[in-house]
Each structure stands twice: as C-alpha cells, then as structure tokens.
Figure 1 (cartoon, one colour):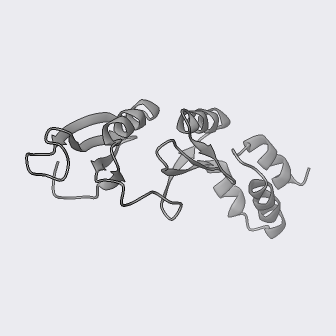
Figure 2: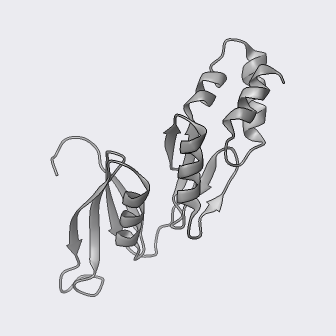
Length: 160
C-alpha cells in the first residue's frame, strides 16, 4: 500500500472478510491483500479480523470490522458502468445473490447492505441527448424499471 491515491473503507460489523471475498468473486481484476487482526487488549477478541485489504475491478478498498455502530445507506453507492445487457444482468444477479435487495432505477443493495447502481453506458448517452423529448422518454422509462433493460430504454428513447 502506498501513501498516494484514495482507498475506500467499508465499515462492517463482523463480515469484512466475507464481504471482501464476495466482491473479489464478482468483479474482474480483483484480489485479496493483507489481513490484519485485533491484538490483545483491543475491543474485539484477539486474533479476529480487523481489516482486509482488497482490490475489486482495479479499485482499492479496505473492509473494516468496526462493530455495529454504523450501517450502510443509499447516501453512498457504487456505480458499475456496463457496456451491454449481458453485463447488466451479470452484475445485477451477482450482487443481489444471497440476500440482496432489488431497488428502483438500476439500484440494488447487496447482502451486506452496500448500495450499487448497475448502469448501462448507453443510458448516460440518452440522458445527455440535446433533444429534450428523447432524453425525457428515456428518463421516464428508466424511472419505471428495477434492473435496467437497454432494449426497452432504446425503444422509449426512439419514441416507440
């Protein structure tokens, strides 16, 4: 680990290692790094996992077993930009697997309570269209969906 750049820290009660292993299994270019453990005299039993460094999709994270004081909420989410429906379907299924919750407009929560947005690159292009009618149709279609359906978004965008 170097002193430059950013590392996102995710606070868990006791699921840091399980969560890190899960995220590494979902995303390409991912790996588990160093694991630190609570020492004697700490707030948790000595030897239990304190932190797990991991990389998911090339991004650095640390998972911390900090206790039950803090919970995840939708104020922070991770966007997964997808090139096609196959990627949307893959990430959606993997991230809701094992107890996650589907949400509206491409949002979901995984089984740890972390919020994700599974976003086709194409919807951003549609929403930036200089024709406000096309952008509005795409936006309304998106707002009516859970998992985003690129073909349905394209139809709405085209006015069909």
